[in-house]
Length: 336
Length: 147
Image (cartoon, rainbow over the protein chains, first blue to last red):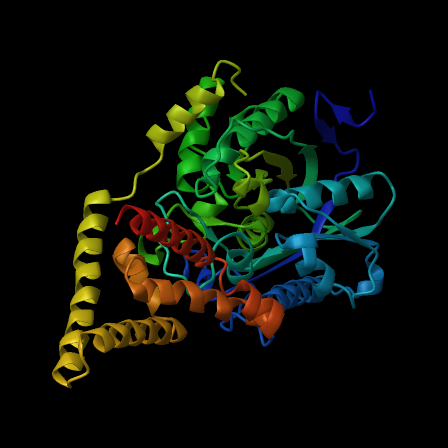
């Protein structure tokens, strides 16, 4: 077995990469939610001064990456690689947003799990000795996602209570070989799970089994249990997926009910903001991680966090063809 | 992951766990809302008839008026908010048909007037037109032969 591999699907870092700097920018609705005081910037213009929703998402990512560079007092030429992804076809949010950056670029797609996926890859690249500084970033935009996956914005449809609200937001993390806490100590790479859920308006239920699979593998591979962490954070299971996840994990013999939360449940107040089951989208877990979790770790309020971003790996075409929704979850252990 | 739970068992469990739409509340709102839109149509019908336009012309004018109102409210970002509450009550009347054509036309304007507005305008209403026209042709043929 490879030296740094642990158990069936985890990785342990010899020299845990540092979370050197992070930034988060969100839209107006997210900026009115419970985490309003934590984001670096709140953009009140959904177009961000651009002419289309797709360009707006690209601009959002560019601004967030620049903000992270500014906070880390770094310039683009000091970055070895950038891992980026979003929800749009062919990842055009990232491709166009970062095209003038002049940083060696890896485009990544893991749906809403992309933040954990980019962090995993970036951390492995650094610990492997291939890079000193890597940026990991993902974005989503409510309007571009609605246009691609659902209905036109002005269409008068109704959403079921299980539906989630795509977050307009972006998070960017700069990982460094050397630097301040928190550090990424372990990564557990998820396997694709599909328990046959076909309802694209109930993604929490589709993704919960992937979350359960990854977290149980993480505990087994690392010999840890839920109490090791101050906070276990899933990406965007929403309120339905969150309660399913707690249930399923109980059957596996793990009780996470006391130290577990979900980014999709944290970013909106579902009752007053009419977001039904909660937030979703790559930008949901990315912005919550960068705005809330990492700063709390820097302040010492959180010491050990297990961040597990979950993604539904379907497309509008597969949904129309009646396929079920394959899902994935990647776990990243952050420790100070 | 628990190997004991099959796909069927998981689906049953998820159905139990997932909150249902408030069907009774939605039905009442759709009934009253749809009725209101139809009453507005009736108001226009009476108005046009009172102006001496005749039954057939008035029917046509009512449809045109409601389609215009639906399109206008869609353009002002209002029809989706009405539809959120009225559901099928806003979807089924001709104003909903208007909304289903105008909303993609607005959304896909960024892809140009030919491949955007022109091509995407019927993504939602297209099936209604195809099967609506097809079934009316079939009904017409049946009527022609059994008359």
